[in-house]
Length: 476
Image (cartoon, rainbow, N blue to C red; front, side, top):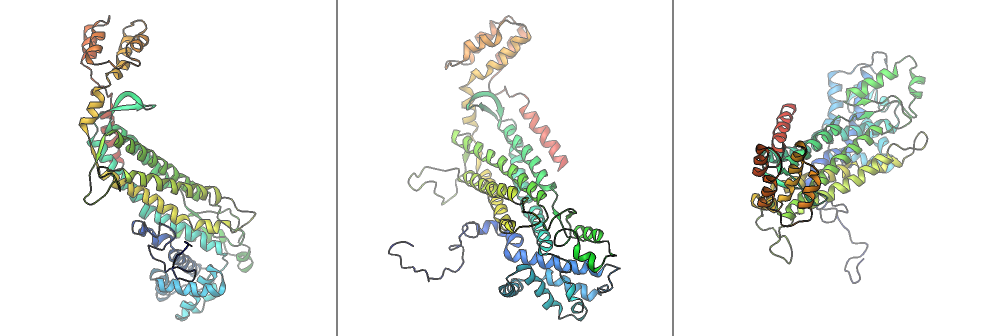
């Protein structure tokens, strides 16, 4: 509390974008709102309702369970609509029940029992809601579905949008020569398109790892042994029923567990996202540097201010924001990956509060991608600056000259070029031409080297970009 503040501890702070503790729900709320149907408290309750309803439907389809006869079309429609039409008002009813039960999953069970009481056929079997389940059976499937849907519906399209923009830029700049830098020093030239295509290739691989990581679910009771199930119905093939149910809702089945699904695949997904974000951070920093060098200019936006005191500035804030959010995402994802697979004995509850931060982790990933896309959209290559840089660094052709000298068995080629160029600021076209024409090599080789410029000494960079993008287009 600030000294002299008119606010007192009793003053209410209604939750708005201005009062939210997290910038995910505050400042950045509009940019990540697409994740709310997947990771909000409302979403978690809705997914739980869906899992519970689908389990009851699955039991009704079991031929050897006479206590839950096959449902009529009316019953199936009624039950499906409870989750399909689930509203914020419904979630508030669940939370009201939870205020009494002090148990969030039990509150969902009671909510469903209240709802099916309106349907005679379903009401008759309402005690089979949550049959044989521990809370983790419902929770692990709910979280798995949340992650699957958010990954496939929100995150992967955002990755695809950014890589599409990068790939388009790589193709457009495939021939644009630029001075490479290794250890921060001038090195053999490349093209801007080639450097961007390198990132596209890395992101493609990382994206595939994110997309193909299995998301598993378990459904086997209190400690993973179907204890209660087999006591009640020893004749039923509970392994088959469990597998069928989990796979029918679109998840990979996990057979061997304690009370909880071990989260190893979720950890693998977190690590895959960390790798993707790390590539993004590398790109953000490189583009930041190229802007600083003047290789790119940034399009100005009417009304925007770069600095509160320096009117001339156009800061690379989008790439800075992207880097910061990717770093925050990785901090959360790395903790999730390290924590979630570790649970004392058959179960402890330390994963429960951690799992609720999957949403913020995904949100920071989404913010990083969004910022990078906005930054890319403002870039314009400065061909004049790129060529001016190359014109000042003729010494980078020393590699080409000494390599040709090796071909024609000229003694100490590396040493001769080192003596000529290292640390020398006077190297220009004429200096190298004079050196080349004095070499004991064939005239054709002399002419080829004499015609070489830093702008044309780019190897197969442009061809490599075109070949890569052509193959990528076929693949995608």
